[in-house]
Length: 248
Image (cartoon, rainbow, N blue to C red; front, side, top):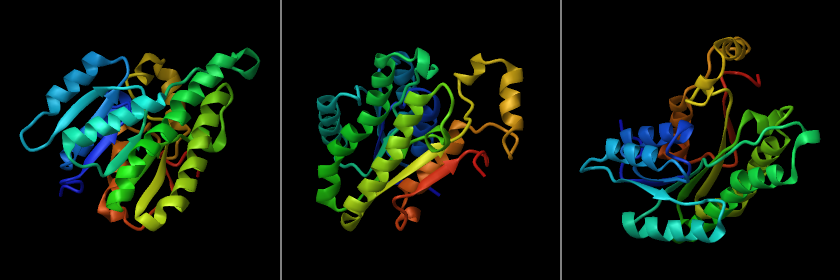
């Protein structure tokens, strides 16, 4: 069953990790996908070529979601290229971890700009289209760290907590126009980045999770499919934890 047939989505940060998993899963559910990348041109083009077929439209765009004007330009181009827009996944994000005593001002500002300001930029950019058609699903990627905090990640936690407050406010503002705004808060998700860590460290994290495993990009992507689909038509202003029970 293809839950996103005839829908079009913009997915930021779609060339690697969780974003890549969301792109691939959305395509299997019949969704046309425009995804962005910043520096991973080869990975983005490889994914675009892998998913190209006659029935589904998939295209990669180099764009900086943290730039207000670039976000608006992206939405204008995607709307022209695809003809319609139904879903926005705000997934772009970075980390610059350090204890507060060692964290520089630039490290704090840059993480807030990429992780949080980008959500404002992209949501603002798609708002006019969603308001005009009186329909749309906004999905913002937060983290368990944005809910409970984490030592050494004050900047990242602040940005991810901010996403939750932003999303709930937008849900209240735009609900009367049938525009839904929800958050997904992943826990420990195993991607190419975690493969660089020691197996003992990763296994220790797995053991602390009630389901005794790390999540996959597909686990997060499946939650996105649900919130983007018509199955979630009466769900807005919520935070869906995809964490194997970490915060239980």
